[in-house]
Length: 492
Image (tube, rainbow, N blue to C red; front, side, top):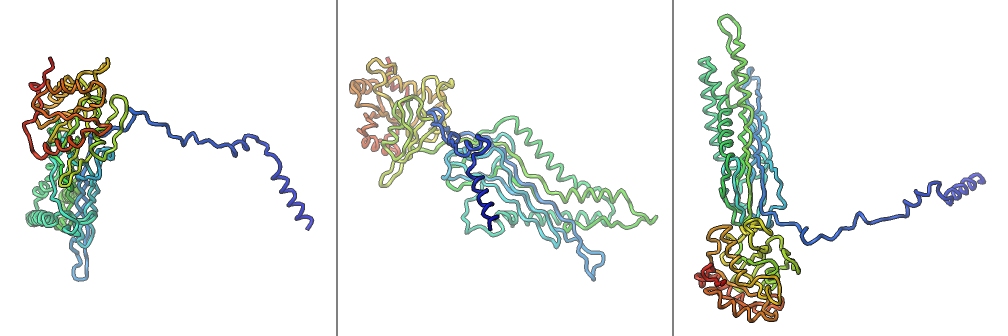
């Protein structure tokens, strides 16, 4: 008992002693959260919208065919029962409202490979498709590969169980017909070889796949010399495009009789050259074809009814927040908006989509400011709303008058694409609450003709109901003649 008490006392004394290494004690009681702190992101370091992306797509390779022989007591020599390989998966672009840019995409997209065939004439399963979701308004430019093909929109209830990922190839009726026709040709050709004893036709069949692959590669190399623009567009929810097709599966030995067992010649010896040729032919037929490859440039053109165009700090983002429920970033400095913002203007029987385009400056076509990087988003708009700052040149400020702002904006639109400004338009005269803005507004009415002008204070939401009514009228097709051109602007 005394021994146990002595041991317990020694343990207590060891715990109460200070550690020999003082740095160990300091490390135990010291704590710092500097690594967990996040620095505040500067305004110009905001994540920009990715509206242009390069995509490398490759379809899945086809599975290899199986070489198998089924033997039974009734058939000692056996008969071939190796199944064909499965078809490779496709790379599909799907239009979805769940995404709004290409920030979630990866540059390299590969579909699944088809499974190999098996004995008992079992066909390999189809490779899994790779579905990539892209936003509405995606335009496809082809750098290399085949032109994308569209797929009919079908619900999940209309799909056959064999068409789901990981099962047999889609459009199984068509695939079965192709395989049946191919198998018949192979069987007839090999049967003629077996009877005639000539392997020349079999060699031609074996080289058929390699020749088709060479032709496809040559066609791709010719097409890669120049980019083919606007080969396809995705503008509807659920719309799909196949950009890379999967390769066909290899043939199993059930499709062609075994020619390994050649009959002995008159001298009682087999022909070794024929054996080697038959092995090469069968191996080439058994290997699945590789999937097609494509290099694409996907570009986003937002689908909006109204596009807000104006100089930096004209109040476009504030105006978007006043007429819709959008919450864009607002600041007292130029180029606050680094990516297009979208908002919905809701009525009882109509919903209008409004796009806030980043600010333009004079010389944007020469890559000044943000350049023309975002002007492609207004190519699909029905109405243009020019937002001008009435107080830009008041009280000795270095800004330019609103009529000169309009002239520069129209010129930049025409530099980007000829005829881009030739659509129904209106002018939003913002910051009407500033001192002296009333006189500038009256002067603006004298200098600009043929286009309605709406005085608005976006911060106080003054004149917003009248502006909403004007936008609704133009979107519905009223007053299509209200188009702003250089002839309607008097700068002198």
